Length: 253
Image 1 (cartoon, rainbow, N blue to C red):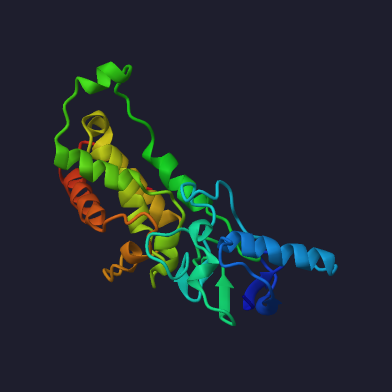
Image 2: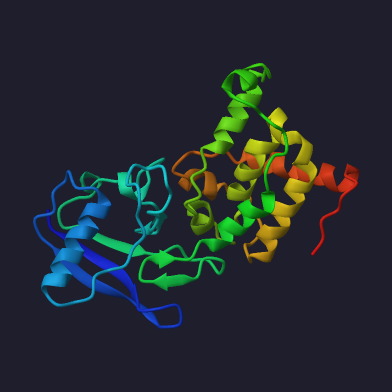
């Protein structure tokens, strides 16, 4: 396959960026998208040019590091597929592919396709830990959890924190990420003692990081590579309202 690439190049956070044209020949349909970028970088190195900087880690679809916007879609054209699990067979010979970083005020660009997702870490850290001693596996199995409750918790726990929800939202909202990280703890018995404080702290951290409000378009759910449901946002909002009305603790700035 021959592929024509338009890749966002930016030397640093404060440097101007632009799309740069590259052409690749002999791209295998069996290559992953990141392997195609590796091929591009090997070509650039041989030609004496600086390779394209992009995030990646496990390349197994479970770490969330690989996210980029491909032809305007977070992670590319395939539903429930991370960039590292996207293969070049999803494109046609001669295609033109635009590759850009996540674009959000809370995700400043570090270089080229790499963005700083520390804001997500601050939200998770704000959520804290559970105080219940859950013991070993046999102890945990003595606490019975309903199937509907466990399904809701496991749906939320699938979030890999890639940031596709932010990149696909016109307000760069992190509501789906924050809701998933809050709800997978808030739903289970072991996470309930800190539920009120946790949801308040995580929502406050989300707002302070500069993420926008939910747009109610559902774009985040569509682009999420793990299919996290927006019902988690509704559940988090309900938890937040209840916590502000009934909790003895009110988290403020």
